[in-house]
Image (cartoon, rainbow over the protein chains, first blue to last red):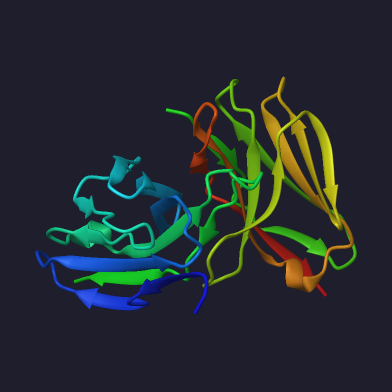
Length: 115
Length: 113
C-alpha cells in the first residue's frame, strides 16, 4: 500500500522492556520524523532524519533510539520503557521542500501504554 | 526555547459562522507557518501554509500572517460540523529549517449544527 504506515497500532508493555515502533513510507521522502503527542503538550519532536544514515535529536529524545539504514524505514526504539513514555507516537515524512512544499505527512499513529 | 502558543479552547461556533483560530510565536525570524487539522483519534493533516505577510485563501480557509505582531490566524468561513477538530499551528524550530517544526498544543473547534 502506498503512503506512510506504522506498526503496531496499539502496544501495551511493561516498565523496563525494550519496544520498537516501526515506520515505513513508500514515497521515497528524504525526511522522516518521530513525534509524541500528549495532552497538554501537543506534538513534540523526538528524532528526525534528513536521509539514510543521518539522524538528529529533537526536543524530547532521552530514552529513545532511532536508526535509518534504508530511506523508507525509520524505526524508533524505547530502550527501557518507562511509564512517562506512555503516549501516542506519530511518524511523519516530507520531501524536504523539493516539490515546492514542506508538507509533513503523518502516519496513523501508535498508541503505546507502559504499565 | 522557541514557542508556539494557542488557546486550547474549545471554541464553539454555530454552523455557517466564521471560526477564527489564533496562534502566536516567539521567534521573530520565523518565515513560514503551517496549520494542521487533527480529527479525534486521527493523525494531523496539513490544511494551510503561509510564508509572507497578509492573507492566503484556499476555499473556505484563510490564513493570515502578521510578522510584526508575531501572530498567525486561520479563518474558516461557513463553518460545517465536519470542521470540528483540533487545529494545530506549527512554525520552524530552527529559523529557515521548515522541516523541523514546533507545534502549538492546538485549539479544539466545535461547530454546532
